[in-house]
Length: 153
View 1: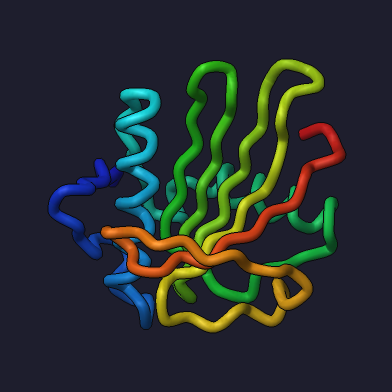
View 2: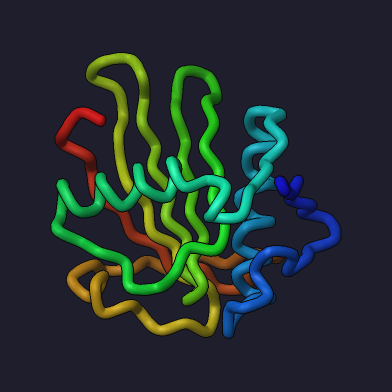
């Protein structure tokens, strides 16, 4: 069942099994607010089992680009297109959020972003990355990093 993410009344719906569920819910709400304000897009997620194609897409890109396999189970995911950019998000039980920004036009921006929920440690599989800090009213302190996608997906 899909969930329309509410960024005014943050809820842990679908994320309850995460040890940092409130922070992960805030991170998810932060993304929802961004897409609503910038693109007037309603950010809707589905349980990972129902969004297996999106979860598999992110896993394939991580594996092929950087030989990364995320150890934590995926809880929720979403995949949508806005203004010529395909966005795929996966939210993991550990508190990790991964997004893939993939401009459909050849030569456009293509990247994978990692965001760590407040209170979680950097996962071993991402220890090579440097994380910058960002403050959020919804998510507390978000630590983020990214890499540019070189292949075609």
